Length: 316
Image (cartoon, rainbow, N blue to C red; front, side, top):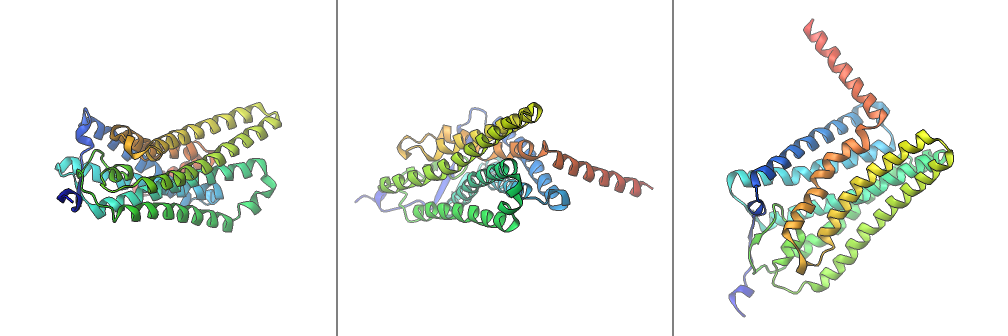
């Protein structure tokens, strides 16, 4: 057995930005989206926490989504920026595993929380009389704990699997983050059995929430169509379509990354897919799900009025 089969890398190089045609422009766009996502989600979290009118199950789940989006962009963009600025692309093996764990936890939790939010809207519109019972505070907490628990179990399974693998191929990862399929591709051991198991788990993790989302929105549209209220129907249709667009971008990127065989893994496609599963949803979610809502806009006006009143008092 040769030396390449007995040694394993303890550090990897994230060189994805170097392979971009215009890395400075690419990073500038990502940074712009990062600051928009940071501002939008932070404002949403602040409003939900401080405004009494937003203490409902819908906004409880929205706060969970905003927190996930904040963690997603904060776990990726700052390190990517520092690496590019310092021209130091190295990351330790354990740091790589931690980043994989965090990404998988947040991605899996977002899949499940999107399904939970669609179910909440289904109950609110299709079963309004049962809403206080079906979506009471205890049920919301149980759903939230279930989302984080299940996503953590899946992420921990993948993270623990990559720990003992020997990495005797190249230590260069053609990505700007530690991507689970990219790391497995560098292993010199047979991972086919685990890949099949992972594909089955990923399939169920993506399929079940997606079916819940589609079924909920179809039921909502059918319910609205029975009311014969054209204005309300058009509004509900527009809301559902905008929600489904964001969900579609997220799921297409996630499925393209994690449901693709490791042997046919493409770093170039994965880098684009990562944007559509982390940064882009973090930018769009606050606007699509909340900042277009009347309750959130009212809370924003209240905050603005308080700020203006405080400035007038200080001026006096």
